[in-house]
Length: 288
Ligand code: DDH
Image (cartoon, rainbow, N blue to C red; front, side, top):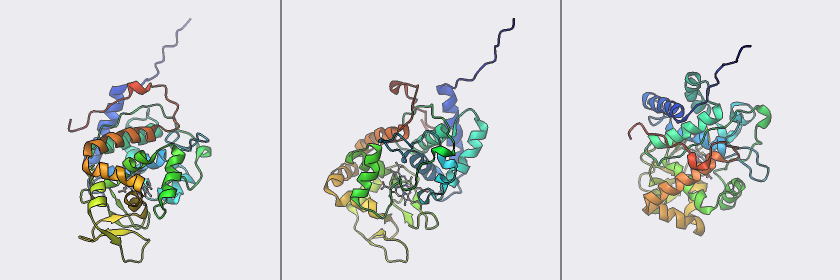
C-alpha cells in the first residue's frame, strides 16, 4: 500500500518572527500615513479586537477576528479601523498560514515594540470565526462617560484599577480624528513613540474645555495643541486611578512593566491556547 506523506505546516517561533519582521518593514515603508506611522491605528485594531471580551459569558475577545464582518466592523467604536485591516492585508497574502486573529494581535505587538515600547510576549493559536460570533455593540468604552463606565467596561474584561490606568497609557500614541470618533487631536507631542508622556502631561499640564462645535473634550492651556477625552481626565480626578497615574508619570519603568503585563492579558482574553504561558514568544525588534 501507499503511505500518505503529505506534510502539514506547523509554524514555529522563526515563522512568527518573519511575520513580525514583515510588518515592521511595512510600518517603516508606509510613512505617509497620519503622523508618519500606521503603528497607532494598528494597536487600536488589536485592542478593539480584544476589548469586546466578557468574562461572564466567555464571549468576544481576539479569538475570531469577527470585526472583519458587519455588524461588528460597522460599530461606531470601530470607525477608521479599516485603515489598519487594509494595511495588514498584504501581510496575510504573504503569510496565508497565519489566521487574521493571530495576525492582528501580532501586529499590535509589533506596533508597540517598533514604536519603542516594552517587549510584549505573544502566544499563537487564535482561530478565525464566522459572522455569528460578532459581539453586540456597546462593549468598548465610550469616551464621553465617567469612572463608573470605565470600571464597568474594563471590569467586565476582568481588569482592576491599576491595569485600567496602565492600559490607558496607550494614548501616548496616535490621535483622534473628527471623521472617526468626532474628537480631534493627539494626546502627546510624540504620537509615534511609546512613552509615559500621557501620564506626565495629564498630571503636570493645566487642562480646560476646548471651545468648539464638537463633543466635549479638553485642551492644554499652554499650547492648545494637545487633547484629553473626558475618560482620560477621570484618571486624575478619581483618587484610586490617580495614584497609578502619578506613579507612571514619575516611573517609566513601572509603566512599561505594568502596561506589558496588562496588554498581554488583554490580547489573550478568551483564547483557548495550546502554547503554554511560560513559552510565549518574545520577538526581536528591528532595532535590537
Ligand atoms: Fe483609545 N481611543 N480609548 N485606547 N486609542 C482613541 C484612539 C486610540 C478610548 C477612546 C479612544 C484605550 C482606551 C480607550 C488607542 C489605544 C487604546 C480614540 C480616537 C478614542 C475616542 C479614535 C479616532 O478618532 O481615530 C477610551 C474611551 C478608552 C478608555 O479606556 C476608556 C486602550 C486601553 C488602548 C490600548 O491600546 C491598550 C490608540 C493607539 C489610539 C490612536 C489611534 C489612531 O488612529 O491614532
